[in-house]
Length: 134
Image (cartoon, rainbow, N blue to C red; front, side, top):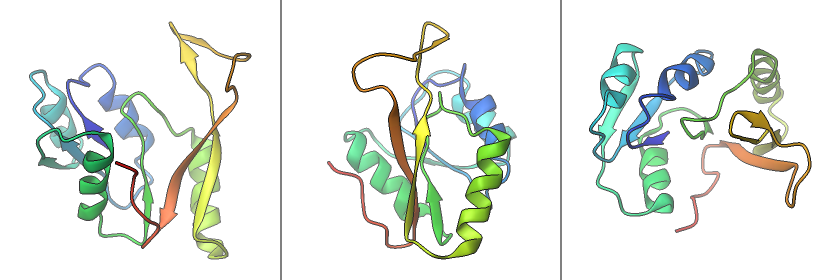
């Protein structure tokens, strides 16, 4: 996960990722409690100066040690049902990546109808699954 000043979001997001073997936060200079909260949650935290979304995500990917990577933003959550589905899909070992639907919201309310809704998130990929576009 890449972050900057995500104090309001990061704890809940990291809690939703408790099923993961490894959690990594790459921060680019938060001035709030983002880094402190991540460390309190037992997450590996690294600093990397901001160079754009693609380079930040790629740096985070380079730090991952596992065979699979799930990349989320701090304002995203993994439901318990999705966590079970992800673990089951990885255990099947039949594909190199997964895509799942994203529930978007605006002002705290779910977006059900709009241009580009529903969207999908290609956030779970096996080792060597590529890099983020720059």
